[in-house]
Length: 202
Image 1 (tube, rainbow, N blue to C red):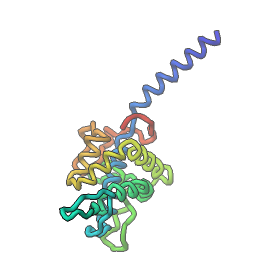
Image 2 (image 1 turned 90 degrees about the vertical axis):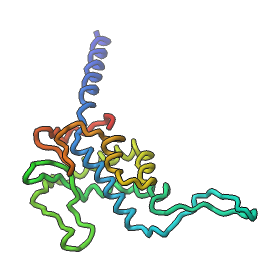
Image 3 (image 1 turned 30 degrees about the vertical axis):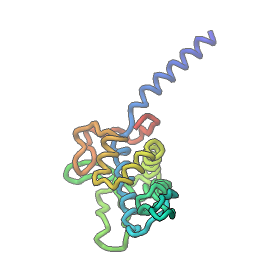
Image 4 (image 1 turned 45 degrees about the vertical axis):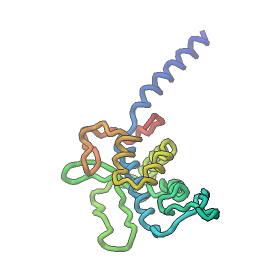
C-alpha cells in the first residue's frame, strides 16, 4: 500500500513539473535579455576603444623575434566575462513599464545613468512592486547568463549590430507572441503571470 502511495505521489510531482516548466514569463525573460544587451553595450561604450589587451598568443616575426597578440579590450573575452559577472546587479534599476497608449508591457530602466535632466524617464508609467519585481528580473537575467554565457560573449566579441535580435530572438528567448512589438513588450491579452519563474529552458 505504501509503495503505491509513493508511486502516485511521484507521478503527480512529475506531471506538475512538466506542466509548470512550460510556463516561463515571456515579458520577464525577454526584458531581461534586452536589459543584458543594453547594459553590456553601455559598459562597452565607456571603455577607451584604443585600449588593448594581451591575449597571450605569440607570432614569429620575419626577423625571428616574437610579438604578442593584442585585441581591443572592450570586446575581449576577458572584459566581456567580467562585465557579465556583474550585469545582473543592474536589474534593480529596472521596473515594469506600461505604455499608456498601447498598454504594451516590458521592463525598462528607470534609474538614470547620469544627472542630465534628459536622462530621467516618466515615472508615471512604471509599476514599482518593490524588491520582488527586481529580484524576479535578476533571477531571469542570471538564468540567461548562466545558460548562454558563451553565446553572449561570442556575439559581443564580433561587434554585430543586431546583438539584441540574435540573442533574444534566435539564441535564448524565442518571441512566440505576435503582440511583441518592435519597441518591445507584450499586450495585456498575451501577458503571462510574472510569478511563473521556473527552471525550464529559455
